[in-house]
Image (tube, rainbow, N blue to C red):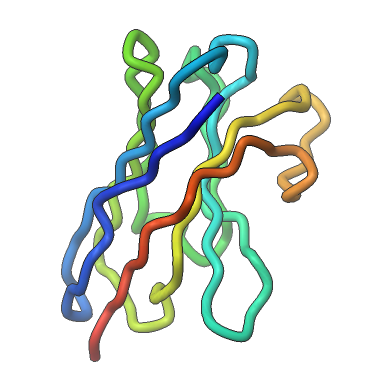
Length: 125
């Protein structure tokens, strides 16, 4: 399985960006997709996740109310709409497949695999 993240770029604070994650291969064997981000000098942080059926959605505390995750199950594609962006949102954003059951209620890197190459989001103040 391969994941391809795209849509990153440079935006001013308060602006918006939409990231896309396209999955190929045996993505249907996974539970869904998650987004993580990693800022320079910091650990990778959970951003959002969604199941292929759309029944499970979760957000990291720092993005709740500003980011919206959605999916197109027919295309095995997932999107991350990011609004009201802040300089602290600057990071490389990665998408990955959920490999553990949602019922575990955990949102750690170990729950995800087949990481994409990442797309850089830079928010200027």
